[in-house]
Amino acid sequence: MNIFKRIAGHIYFFCALVIFMLTMLVVIIPASIALLFDEPRRAKIIHPTYRIWMSVFLPLVGCPVVRKGKKHFKKGENYVVVVNHNSLVDIPVSTPWIPGPNKTLAKIEMAKTPVFGVIYTAGSILVDRESESSRKESFTKMQQTLKQGLHLCLYPEGTRNKTSEPLQPFFDGAFITAIRAQKAIIPAVIFGTKDILPNKPKLWARPKVIRYHFLEPVPTKGLSMSDRNELKDKVHDLMKQYIIQNA
Image (cartoon, rainbow, N blue to C red; front, top):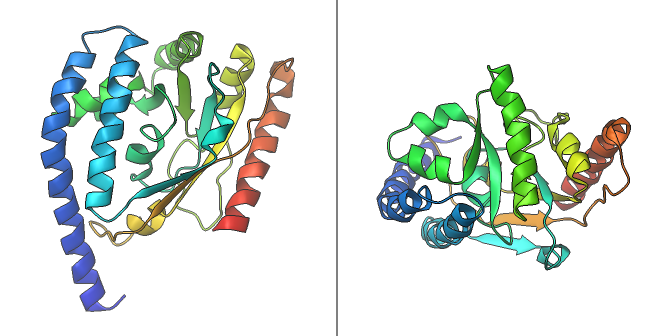
């Protein structure tokens, strides 16, 4: 990377960060109000709020979101949406742009961040990965979320993909959750976020269009826990092949 591109990327990163923080100060108000309500009312307040926020912020910094496959979300149905995870940019894209109120599973550490922690908490099921009781409780809360008619947004890779592979191996959690609730899985693929905010160099970014594609639902009706690995492998293969063919 030449020196001019590197400097431009650092300048862009800090400008985008300032815009994010300024717009966040507006969103903190409805997020705080939403926390006064129980689910699913909270999600129904917070989802359109975050959607409006990202509809302003992302185009403002040159990263508009183009969606494909919204038709796979049928009226009156809710789903477990599993999304690939390449960058921190995935977080403000994945949940707001799912068609309908939803919750995501998130690390409890981020909830301790001043101001942003309120926004983070309002839209998430928090889990302490170091606590077995917290992990068990998160499974219960995910089932409750689906029973309440909300979508569930999960990253089955567990962490950002810093490898050269299209996808990392998947963990079982999303598939156990979907089978228990007998809810269909919608695989979703986000393109472009790794280019916007790569792992290296640090504090460097660039603008780019983000593509968010929803694939056909994978049913779980009639499946049992013994089918979870086959289901996991099927969804992984669908997403991997789609990434390879459309990157």
